[in-house]
Length: 94
Image (cartoon, rainbow, N blue to C red; front, side):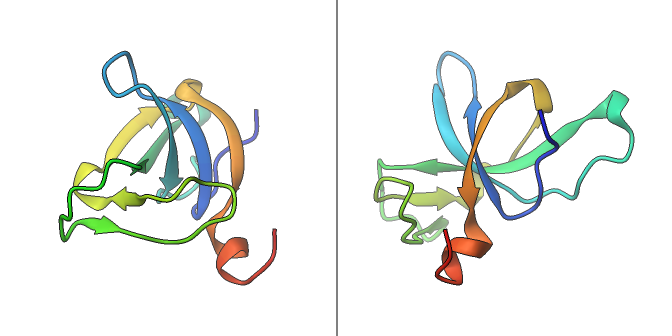
């Protein structure tokens, strides 16, 4: 598996309660592979109207928002697969 890069959206196993969901990578790439961690912002489709919900239209995601109040750090082993890149989507590329 490749290391996640800042701006990429990955499908992540957040555990039984939080389930598998898309997350935006905000951390920088890990230099020390023994401590391969990623800092992420989860995406949700259950909007509550919070000021911490950042809505961005992305072709490969259902309508929803990134919940910036729920920043998490997880090991790379929880990253299931890359869905795309937020930066390329914002620039009109896929």
